[in-house]
Length: 139
Image 1: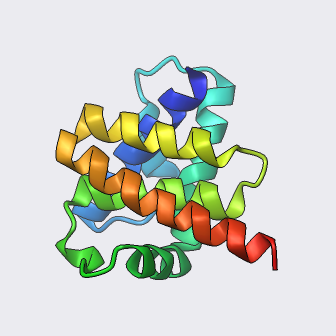
Image 2 (image 1 turned 90 degrees about the vertical axis):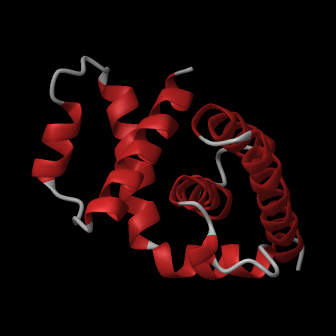
């Protein structure tokens, strides 16, 4: 559950940054965590997801575009786009986390923060990304 909370917090931060056009910095993080008593482990995993998703955002967006045929990333709902970005970061760069876990977490977070249709959409895209990552790994 700690990792789920971290993923949800990461989504909230990514969503906020995109909507406000802000950059990730200490002030943004301080404001976000203000009044929140989450433990260090949750905060660290949240920061890992946010920092590295933003650091690799161009590559991540290209991977999503390839998997989301007939959908431009700009057409996606902001919440769905950021769920996909964070999950894609984990699928591509965090080999220590099982792909099935990442996909399931993305689906569950979509159900909570977006729509049932979005959960299916996200499942399809993340499954394609995971499949392409497995193919690359086996080359």
